[in-house]
Image 1 (cartoon, rainbow, N blue to C red):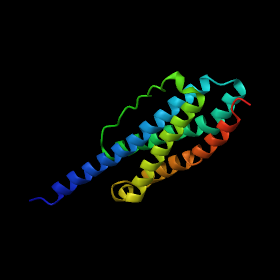
Image 2 (cartoon, one colour; image 1 turned 180 degrees about the vertical axis):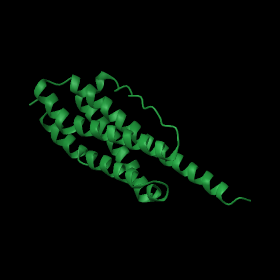
Image 3 (cartoon, one colour; image 1 turned 120 degrees about the vertical axis):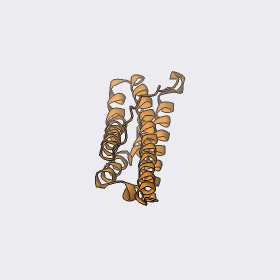
Image 4 (cartoon, rainbow, N blue to C red; image 1 turned 135 degrees about the vertical axis):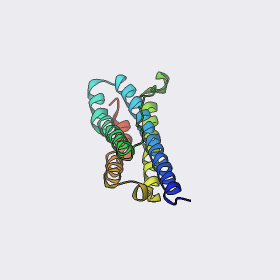
Length: 158
């Protein structure tokens, strides 16, 4: 039995699982972006600018960074990349606060997924420095979203 055969397969399988976990976090960030985009459409210019600065822009940058991290790692390890589709934002009856709450929930899920992934040390075991740096950067970008959302929802409409 060739020892490298099963090890190579398990490494490839572990890398694919890692990519799938990162993709799930990216999907969560996509949900957050869609909800924030819809919330923006229902706000006046001043409140919309606040939402864009405090929430939309950090989540958008995190989403882009996560997609780039995913694609670059997939390319480095020879696994086909994935296309991410922007989800529907939800029903307009949610209202601005409902959209913001949905975005916070989705962002919190993404952060939890990435945190569990980092805590598992799988990015160290099957990943590389660029992957670890990308995941850390995404988490840093979305770190304050819940607090900024609370602050923003207190002043919307004033």
